[in-house]
Length: 360
Image 1 (tube, one colour):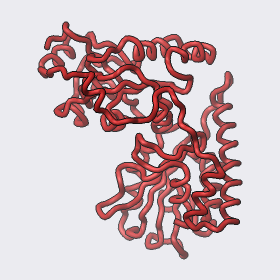
Image 2 (cartoon, helix red, strand yellow):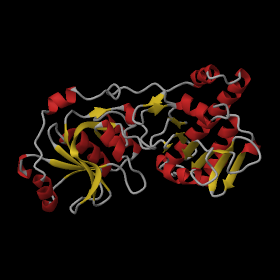
Image 3 (cartoon, rainbow, N blue to C red):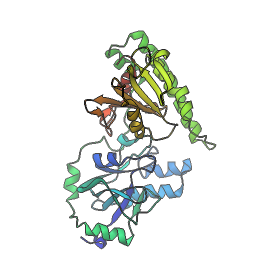
Image 4 (cartoon, rainbow, N blue to C red):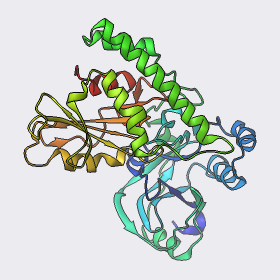
């Protein structure tokens, strides 16, 4: 197949601070956002009213309208790295499952069949365009490289029929309610009077989170909360509400942002959870490796849990026999109290809160 017989698109899967390559490959999709304004083309007017740039609106239009089933896709990260090559196998979709991809709302989605020989191991190539998420490949060197792969097209209709379900198209997922979360905690054996305190704390933190979102997205938007502010206003209050006594919480302990201890005295031997905090709006899940490096230090063999957070979002990673899991076991977003997170194959708000609690 020659490059003049088909179209090849380059689609970004994050930036230098946020990488969702594995989400795209594992779930067989390409993504674009912001997606919280609704399905395209309904989103167009809402995005214009909200003041989004015509450049971004054109980018999403290109993604939703111009890409066609059968077109080829190069999945890029940065200016030179290609992580996958695949073929579009379905129509444009709006999938609320991707409403929080490490803090980004990326509900605009297309299903892709990634070629087995060209995925996950990065290939460095010239000709990748910087800028818009979705761009048609026109650089001769890059097109010649793609042609040299000699990939055969697949029956994209059959491939689309066989893909897994990631949720209903254009339907918003119903979040968990605070009473539902309370019922779950009760079922896990948390005392009823403590559940009431936890529900009250979650309600307070959710309202505070909405205030931050409104302030940051306003015409005179302020910067997101700093790491210290996230710890002070969100993380510490949440942990104490979840049953952690202040004596068992240490801030900035041996370079750890927040250390939780199974018992006193505080020591490497009694360290049970490492919490790594980032400033509001930063990539949260990519902090896992840094948290793990603290948890695996000599003498900390009893540490069996990692929590990464920007104050509003929390990923909980559990330890297995061969180390900590690569994917979170549960994920919480105070602005989206979801029952589960299929893009991470993990539990949602209620499970995350229990795993983070002193009762787990």
